[in-house]
Length: 107
Length: 242
Image (tube, rainbow over all chains, first blue to last red; front, side):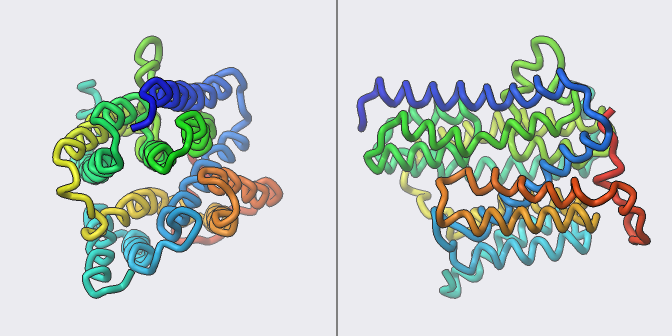
């Protein structure tokens, strides 16, 4: 493996920086009183981030396309969730459809 | 902590439990991959406890295993984790706890705990969901990583079980309630499109941040344009953050 000291330095940097990100948003929020409209926008911002996370983790792998099996599973899960299926059904359907497609040879 | 069990109903806890189970399985593959890439057990173990953010840890391991510098790998991981700053802005004050508890409450901020908190209507329920999910992930992610590293390459291909589809499905299931609001949905879809279009060209983490540009769709439209005859009320935009 790599030089352990360097790995420890990298690991510590990542851990400390991530904690700083987690803390600084809250501190900003506590310091400034946002009007309700802005508070709603901030919550919508989290939904936008999460939606972008869904799209990128479902459709991409590295810088390219993830293949069809995973987005197909997530799409089925999305339709089920929209139709108010139970959470367990939604999540297991995503894994099940994806696994099934891969079994059938769909990447 | 007892208030968590009182505030959340059985179904809410079951949903969080399932999510943590999914995190545990992803942790298994993470630990196995780390060891198979030549890292000793303590690296995924320490990363999983101290960083506690899966995507950035996979990236860190991947870059270092491919011969990259651990410092460069840390910076790439930080880029991925920068979304925690807007998460902190979005959480109503008090969700992450007060006083010394906040030290831990801050550490357990992740995609899952934030999305479960946002999905709850009231502050006590938001706080309970956040802590239940946050502590669950704190137990399951490192637990899965260590066990995966011990079992090693035996379960290298968790993709065969479709486990990689579970994370986006969990997040999607939890934001679907917000997406019933037409304006939020439009902005979310635009953000997702921006992130996807940027993915081939930008380093990991940046595309998701870039999605925030879609907020202009919500800023420009007048606030009371949202009074339209939808069958579902605009849940997301009616929640007030105290």
